[in-house]
Image (cartoon, rainbow, N blue to C red; front, top):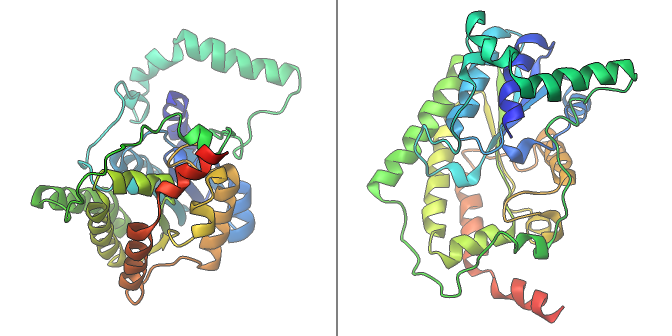
Length: 311
């Protein structure tokens, strides 16, 4: 996971591009070549496994400052990250010394044994053996088994269903507002000539089961509404929601855990975005939200696991 954090800033500085795919592990299986075919761009991919909104925003801001040609951005909005502090992080020890313009503090990277053995020597060997280097499509990508049996390896389902909370607390509401405003809205408004394609990551039906079992679903819907209304105020943002793609979301063969979809879903998402499929507007966002509530509040979640037992 940390290789991305040592690599991405260098991509921003040294590659020739006018478009970027960025996000968490939910974006790792996007193929820039597919984006280029659909959008007519020259794109790079910069993903950060386990990132919070702030880390993605700060990296994107550095790229936008350095590259005036960056006019198209596809950016994952992790649905489970809406209700978090603006500066939430999952890890420690980020190599922030690589992100500034001071070359003198980069010595801890240059003289790092791991970088030398796993980075420098590996690439020298590939050059000598005339083997192709990692492509931008392959960079940070993964291909893991999918299906309910794999989802359940990391999902400890509550047997007793908790009472459904009515919505966000005042503190949580302010948290969502601050998170979206400081990490997304303020950045995109600084670059009105860049188009930002944002989408809520389409998690599996097991994610919604988790929300339902723990009584958190109405809280999540309220956070979505707040974020959506704020993002719709940004003229250069095109916001997408794919939670009505029930054939994808309810087919657990598309997922390796509650959240992460298989590589072919990334390809479909690019096609949906390019076609305007799932685009959220002022005219449709409330009806789509009500449709979400109707479906996910009334879904027969127990049937997911009954089918597994019968097998």
